[in-house]
Length: 149
Image 1: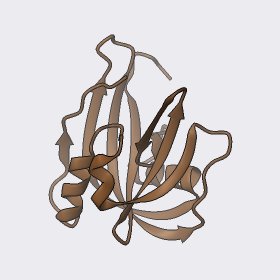
Image 2: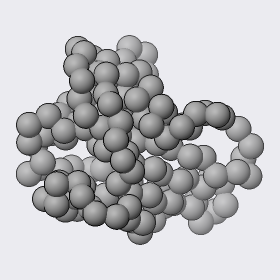
Image 3: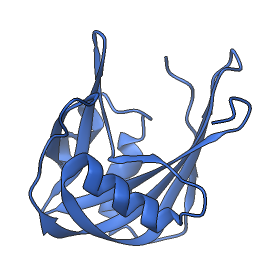
Image 4: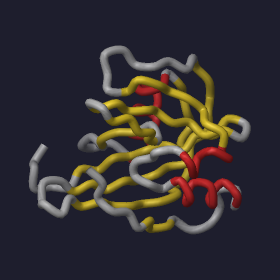
């Protein structure tokens, strides 16, 4: 990866009943939740990247629908630039598993009522709750985010 190019991360918003799918990352002494997702590969669509990443990180198969949000975060020291694309996806089955030997140490469906209270990177919990309330309808939104170390 070219260090002077933004990294594009595609993530999926997957609901099961009134719970949303998240993966917990652990790096050193820090733990935080993220929507399942990862880097876009050359020649890959956003939908294909989201489906591949959900399968790799959770064991679930999804059908990816429309884009919900886009956000970016730029390291003020100039080291990294992240562009995040969030896609709505339908759970189509599979066994929920936590990857072995990964920075992901937990995979869980978290009740939508708790999403605003978890440590979530990027910090988009309120936007996720609002999107759920609207039935995930409306135009694609640009979410303001800031760099968090």
